[in-house]
Length: 441
Image (cartoon, rainbow, N blue to C red; front, side, top):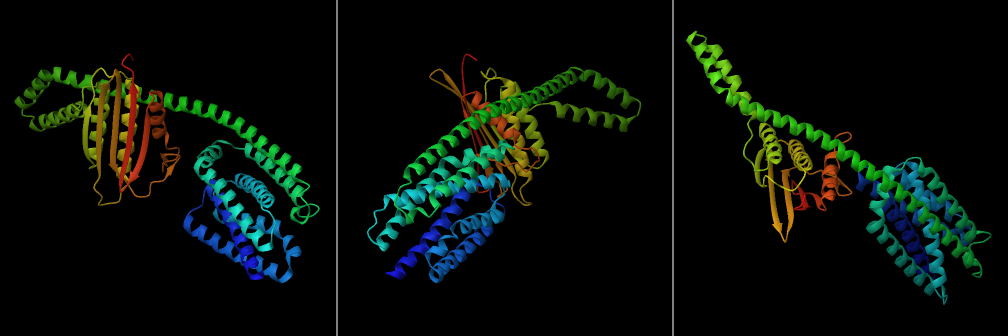
């Protein structure tokens, strides 16, 4: 019987260590190499678990219980030091929040378990904690993780005050549950203190993060408008330059007779080399300005043909299948932004591939009308490296300050009640965009 109880105590300690580790991994950003750091942490936790239980076996429960708080804090600090890539103030907030929830789960499990015998109590207590820990961790990984990472990216000094709130709650809960004696040594006459303190705990957390979410929403709306305005201004300038290039090509064709006259004069004067140089220069100038017939839409045709030429100059095989009418019911600057950003990202993705990789870009664009509504489908596929990292659904840019282009595409898609998806699989990166266009636009 005693051996089984000791085994259960060891398992319970390992359960606590697993909860601590998984709670942190669900919220913090990990340092690289991730697998190696996680493995080191797991080995340390297992060693501490057996050492703690050996101490319990040798010195008894009363002395060992005094080490609960410092051992748990020590385990957390070890994990943060080895694994956490976040700021310390953020990591400490996660730690104290984890402890607050941990204390509540332990107390609730103890209250729900009817005491029959030491062995039965340990088994049921272990099961209750497993269920509650599992539910909390599932919620963290499924729902809380992306929202928390967004707050980490945006908030600055505000984390200091939020962390202080979490710390004070931990002190309050520790005093209620552990002073003057640990709650499991006494009759349960402090449940009202625990219940009221956790009611305040969840209320304050809800108010803090509700307020912060409102601030974040306002900040993201401003950032969205700033990025769209910046991108629109850039692509307006690009479209104007390309229209000027087209007009220059038309003027060159119109002035072709004058070029012939100039060449005849040079040839009649015996200036053969000068004539060849003049003809070569005019040919290159005309070719650089002429756009290929990719589609009927002028702006899309200009953007696609220009970027296709740049891709081919970099020895990237490029195929474009675009079916766009000239009167597409969409702002041409917004369309140019999506196409140019997607093409630019595709070219950069190809150039980052290792030597010997087949570099290619495939573009498929289709517009359809069904039941009085227009839908625009845009798909870019390109060769890519195998080390692409995604954050919140967006590929992480390797350029300082990068990532604006992918966000601009997403914001434009939102403007047209559409969606964008980025994915990388087996050396192929895909950008999929779907836009819903109003025929009255």
